[in-house]
Length: 112
Length: 110
Image (cartoon, rainbow over all chains, first blue to last red):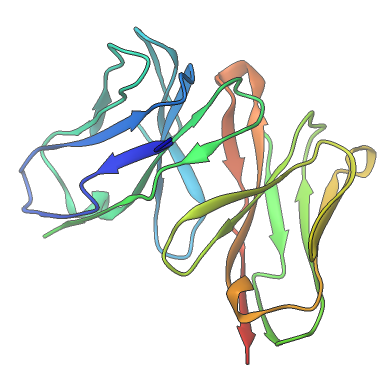
């Protein structure tokens, strides 16, 4: 049971480049989330999904897009990367949106 | 929206000491989660504790929902307890998104 798998673990982007952060879970969870964590701070929600085909914005969605075509996958797309998007990105899932949250190991992104 | 505040922001302990971390929240909640982020960045779910007290080994947590706070107790601390401890509250009408506190950074010295 792999839980929540994120790829890549590390990435350096140049300003203006685009990339997709991958997130896959094998627990058949309906609820999935993308958070970002800036140094010394708590996590802030970028986007979330309550099931396949349903996504919604969180606190800091600007500069990002998501899709949820299957229960398992919830990719996060960065278009036109900016230095302000340098952060650690975490994907998470939950069976109920109440408890049992499982986090991936994170993607450390640097935009230069 | 709900605000979540943690104290202290950082804490240094000698191995074997006990500690108490606090989490205050601004509105009534139906759930509260404690997480440990280890020095490698991995987030581990410690407790789901909407009210009452739970214990897991040397760690225990108490939530007093009516007074809007939760406490995490670490007894006989070990160097492996080092890292950042977060409390977080889910918002049910927004897909269960978690509102995180700023964290308490714990350093346990040998």
